[in-house]
Length: 123
Image (cartoon, rainbow, N blue to C red; front, side, top):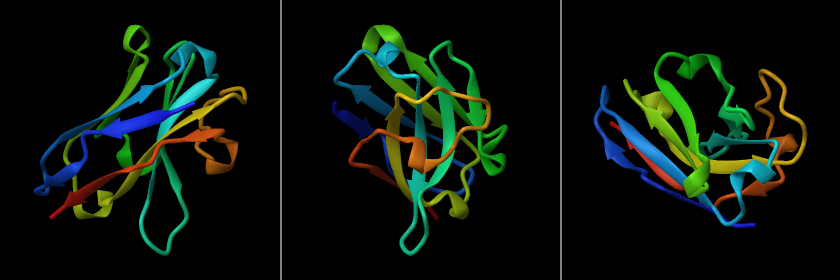
C-alpha cells in the first residue's frame, strides 16, 4: 500500500490549502482514512478521519475550518483547510486503517498505513 500526499506549502494566516492523498489501493478496501499532523517534539495527532460511507470526524480545534472528503473513483482523499493559523503549522500525514471506524476515532495507534507527509506552514 502506498499513500502519496500533495498540496502542502506556505500560506498566510487566514488562508486556505487543500491537501490530497492518492492511494495505490482502492480506498473502499480500508475501514477508514484520515489526516494526522505532527510538529517536532510532539506526538502525531489526528485531525480528521472519514469512514467507508463518508462519515467524517474532526479534532475539536479544526471543526468548522477543515473538511475531509474522498473520491472513490480517484482513490483519493482530500483535506480542505481554511482560516489557517500558526497552530496549524505541521507535517500532515495521510493515513489508512483496516480497523473498524467509530465516531471520534483519531488515534495514530489505529493506523495501518502512512504516507510520507506534506509540510504545511502558516505565517
